[in-house]
Length: 401
Image (cartoon, rainbow, N blue to C red; front, side, top):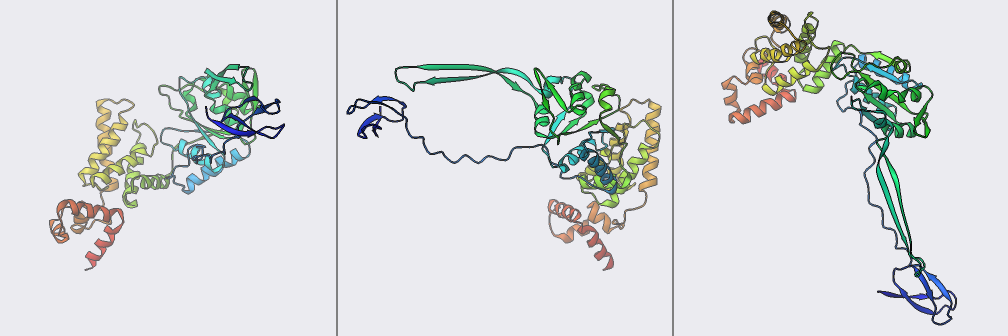
């Protein structure tokens, strides 16, 4: 056992004590007893820890057109005045992106909850799961041993409870996927601003807000929301975006030129409005077509086989989701072919007959020869030119020369 020198508090003479151990000693000089406790070690600098996650940030690719701005401003005003908002719309109508964006604008920590058929009330407010044990061994007096052991139930899964206590903004995504009885706890939270718990309650923070989203379509996993809950929120019905907003979102997610994106969006909207059995008013098919064209080097032109095949793969498969007969499948194909000719038959402005094909379609061997590189390098160069918007400038100079 390591020893160290200490001063007796009575006679102030130096005595030997055990290093790093707290106990009672008897001074060999004055015979008086005293307690010795080692000096605490200097506290080390706490390790740097990253800031706590307060929730998902606003989508980095969020597009705010006048149509979207009006929706965001309206939702934000409701929430700032103490109301709770419900965004209801079909798949792809921008419910979740809008909810997360508005939640971040409120400037409070954000909690994201996903509705689930297996979710219960305890998954929202918390529940006891397991135990937390603590053990204390006290030998302050060397002749006495004191031992304490304590077990406490561990409370876990309390996202809603912490949000109510700390004034967070909750985004309850697809809340109708949860069973109505699981959401009953929200009735008193939204109206009386009290969260009932077993044996007590939690007062809801004044800054607490909640944004619900739901899909009214009838598909597996959807439960009806109780009227008492719907009466406590403002429901905003979303039916899709306007054409300019769809074009802006599609271009942001695909990187295709706007002139081509506008054709794709117009085609998707026309096919959607043709009275066929399409699934929903979603912008996702336009984004998917644009991405495929960019990857495969196709263009929104009626004589481009990549474009035609991509539209067939995306749109016709979407029309079959609700179930179609062979006659309806044939009608869908005829309608799609007609719309492609009506909307995309005019050559693109950036596609002069020969030079446009060489720059954008990579088919002109003479231009490739002038580049003086192998085929792989040429394709990479042309792709970079297209991404940087240099293809149109190059074509204009070549045409002028």
